[in-house]
Image (cartoon, rainbow, N blue to C red):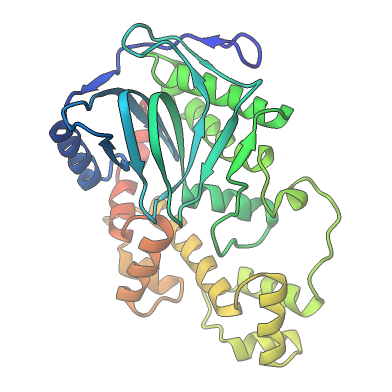
Length: 346
């Protein structure tokens, strides 16, 4: 258990996997990327290719994946330009994963680093223990949209480096510490969906409340200038009638402004265009239906058409960009939805 904000945490050691060569890592990364089970960055050694080994354990629960790794030699890490998640590295102090399973999550000093889904990410040189928290992009942005009462149409501009000096950040790190401890402990009550899924959701929402980003003031209820009435009207129409064949001219007419004024207002107050906002609402509703549908009754096409997507190819492409997987993959996962609710999470 965690002892205070920055105490030592004991975790079960049963899940550690040794990677001893570059070839072993290449095979591991290829297999897991192809199976869509886990995401890996590209990792390589500094200098001699024979000096490459690390120990790791990785596990996923709902929208949260935890990677706990101990690099024995200097490595570089390249996360590419696109990732399906928000990637958070948390400071860890430990002698070595090979010599013990205890680690201390540092909450008094150091910093949390956040890599957004879009943009280059990597580390030029690293050695030692690292704890990475990967939160699915759609889960983070949908949680923010639910809190704001409107769609989020682009990635969240989290401050990249956040000191662990505030109570909110230290509190979130404590959640990470407990979550990690129980995630790797066999028989933990966290493996039960009715316990684990709300905890994972709290990790997502906790990040939004603990870190700095442009929406923080709105989440905390601070007064902000509301958008003009016409923009609010158009947003209300979109949210209520996303399944209907809405056009920008129809939205402008129902908001009693010109098309040009509506488009300029959306750019100024929402940060996107009316039709992009509509598309993102439809994608979010379509994903919800795909996750809840019975594949023997509903198909990708029926869900897409239900939410106004008449071109299946364009729908699949937009969906993959937004959620990091094809809609058919989401629908196949829904076939096991009832099983996951009644069973335990590995």
